[in-house]
Length: 114
Image 1: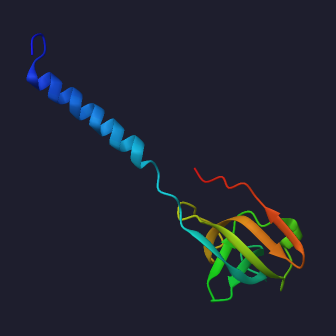
Image 2: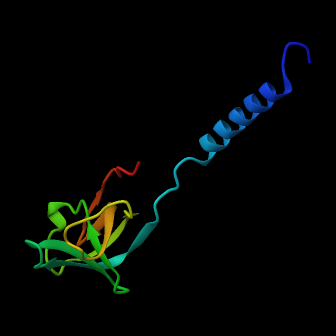
Image 3: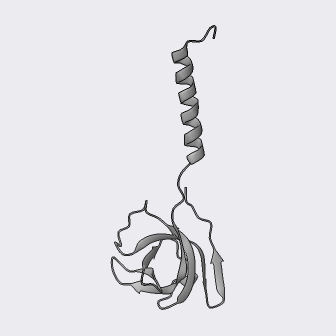
């Protein structure tokens, strides 16, 4: 190997390998949830709408459309759990809704998961 030193090649190889591994792994996708539940008005911290899933899990929708902000509305929903978000409500698991439907109306939103 004329012109190259073994330590220099080893460092170069390690750098390229690390860059490839980091690029391939990327960011993990946040957990997706789907289910049926009920929209509920929660009279805490100034009031907000939450979703109580049929299994009892409480979700705090971060982007609930106005058409679905109705206390007692039965819905079906899909979204991403947002573990990277802190809220003042301290109620439920933050959820970014990607699809929601109820009583013949449906909406699909673009998720801003990055």
